[in-house]
Image: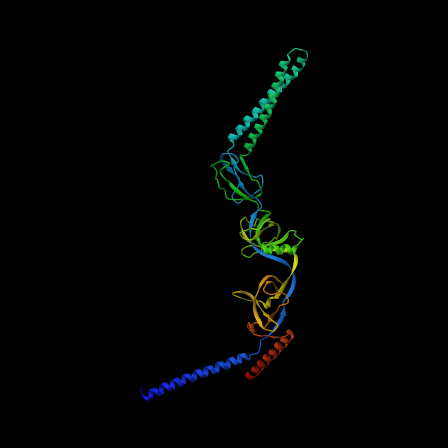
Length: 399
């Protein structure tokens, strides 16, 4: 290697070392300036507390009060139907007709049998009445009289049996009219006209009662205990709101009027039930909804101004401030909205200090400088005056 190459290499190394030194100097100076940056000025308020109704939100399912399978009670061919699928029917309304001829004939025979025995009984009673006079005067023997009496009693028994048989055949004839057992909406017809049906054929259709209607929903055992403790002796029916999957709120509130007497071992929840009026038949059996349950008594809960709450991918949070004015990012869970505040279910408690103004400049783990709202207002006014002065100077310069 000649001398020129050596000089060039030495010069390159020197330049690199010099550049690195300059970079370190600049970074050190920048870091020093950052360290000297004043703490951001913020307004701090304690977390408040309000009396509210305890609420619980849960997924629910609409359930008909009555869900009845319409069955054939006799065997025969399905002859007629008197409704369309989806119709609303009343209890006792005719739905189907099973071919009645066979059962009508049997009823007529049973009725004729009743009339026949009734006529024979009437004749036997007249004969017995005459025999009572004859046996007194020894015109007939006592044995003859006893025979007439036994015949009359036999006919009385036969008539009772015939009447029972007639009643039964008429009952069976009545089953040829398949009636709606409850008010409600008719579902799909599973057996079409012309088919032969029997009591074991299964449901011809199903009727779901519509008004009122139930909504069942699970409540975690911990929340159930909280609800019981909150209401204590005030366990009258509780108000329940219903929301569809679209977020739309159902117009009518319901009442939670029943809860199960056991905990589901699989889910660790208690099943509750609310009853809703459904006059327009909007709620349908099997529909999935969301419910919001309200306690009867009020409880105290922490509240935070909406302006103090921010949100990122991990959830909602506030900046809490300790006794040394060091800010910390604290995640919270919110409940209902109360005016311009959110009710807090977890994360902070009443009395905790949080930043409510100047949040943009706060760095978690770094100190903040507390100022009052009045001081902030003065600072804003001064900045506005400075801005107005600069605008005037610019406008005067243009002239």
